[in-house]
Image 1 (cartoon, helix red, strand yellow):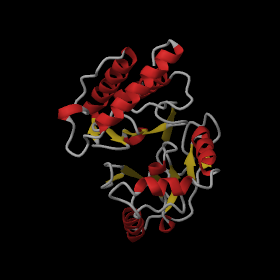
Image 2 (cartoon, rainbow, N blue to C red):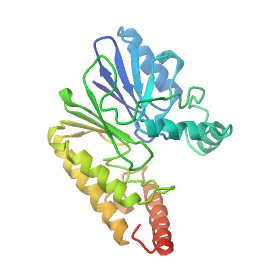
Image 3 (cartoon, rainbow, N blue to C red):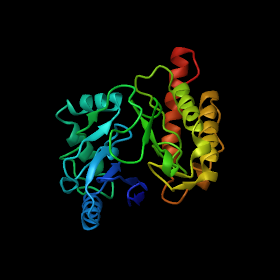
Image 4 (cartoon, rainbow, N blue to C red):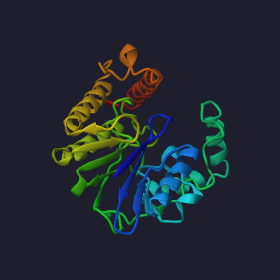
Length: 270
């Protein structure tokens, strides 16, 4: 397995070698990075035989023509969310406009965005000729979010969870209980934690076996603090945030305020 970290938000792309080619998980963000990855695979005699998007957010739905036309899978809920997003003809324009405010404006290829093949509901493994990649689907962070556990390699590809730089970001759009959704997802990841040797978050640093339960506990403590309306003691926000990631504090403040309004409106925590 190979891991490539993007310059943008420490986004991690994962390559899993199989018998006939590679499985490419969340392939990257910037055009030159995707092209470089495609060239490196071609130079080593490898082709992409399958792709997988862990969840339906734009930075996990990108592709490059040089990567070929392999099926790009997502869970049924993930694919349905992507279809819904892209049914709006202005969706790509809005992403491009958002990127104008970043250092990667004009460097993200959107032409092949979101061409995701839905796996049947309850599918347990990625359908490909390579190491078994167990799908751990949950409803934290985004509809149909899934981690992949490559069991024989001891690698957990966590999507946008278990990051050392990003706090848990809840799906606050139309979900009945985003707090419990997140806690339930952490319990699912915890159920395989003892067999994990390498943890790959969607954004942030790769962790070893000693980091898995520590990050689960850190995320759980953060979510419980949100539920109780407390200010979490979390090194990912405030003065201890990693340089360049100070904006995560704004993310925290925004979702704390939304949860408080939700609680006031419904009379329930979160």
